[in-house]
Length: 159
Image (cartoon, rainbow, N blue to C red; front, side):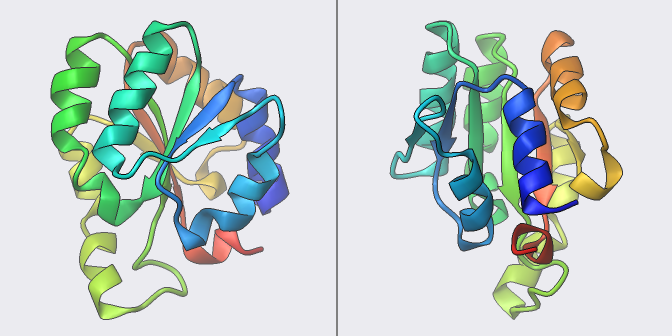
């Protein structure tokens, strides 16, 4: 799936803003998403992004939360105690460093553990290659009250 196709699927999912910490693997995709109708907010840390997204959701917005997988490891408490306790299911866009063409040793450490972390936090996850209808996939998890994560491998983000 190309960056444009992923962006189109995310836009069809009805997100009205994006909040997160930029990741170089997601740059092209975020450029496709950033439009006047989809503002992008960049708090200083990923756990802050989760808190901002919870607040935006409670105020009636539909945010997409983006980050690199290393930052995902800092969000566990915010996702389980803040977002889950507030009954706010969040949609995550995660740059999956340490997979695909990215073989930097310090990225591989988190890359190899990303899906296990998501599974451990009971967050459903998928990749663009595994999900043809991103809008429907995110909508189904939101309706069920569950967090969901779309993992973007480095080469997918730059196609």
